[in-house]
View 1: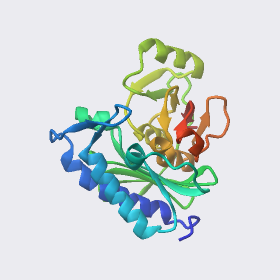
View 2: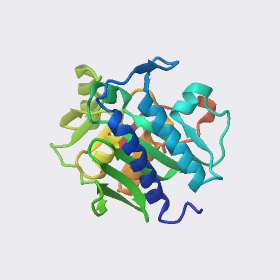
View 3: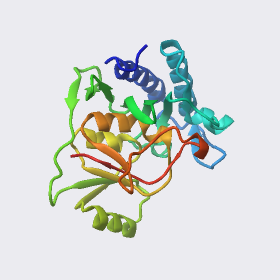
Length: 256
């Protein structure tokens, strides 16, 4: 299937929703939390979601390789990757999931020539799903009709930044001084990109570690909505960094 067709993002959205329906019953269920090699948490929800997603991608796109979080954690990331591949995070925001907070997402992004060209993000607790289609970004909620989403113009004096819950006040103030936002809201997971994409927030500066699968799908959505994700130096934010274990440097996600 050609990734230039309009339905790739819609197929990814359907797969994300299916995985979300599998994950949601495990939320707030008291499930066991395990520690991965890097001490980050993983649950049965992560594993079940990833198994389903990998199965569906193999059925729909058998010729496109996949780099996924839990498989990479267990077996290591591939030493090299071609120009076209999927990045999968079956449950971004596992810490929020474990706390019982609603900000966790299911993510599938398609990379071509180091850029995200299609993606879908689902928030299981709310049933919201954001995805790319026809060069635009769309949002659907719990089976409702899809609606196009678009970033908003930077609201001078009212710009809202999204950041992680763990950010210290002095670090947040330094970012505010640097990027010029006036308000800040802590939020977990890739949903931050999606809130910017739909015009509910303006900027997400990330001065800390992430992996490519954490951000690829939401990057595709934000880009299709008219936003951008750039390195901290203002350069293109690239994927397929196999030689770096698919680790990301600092980045800034922006709306209009």
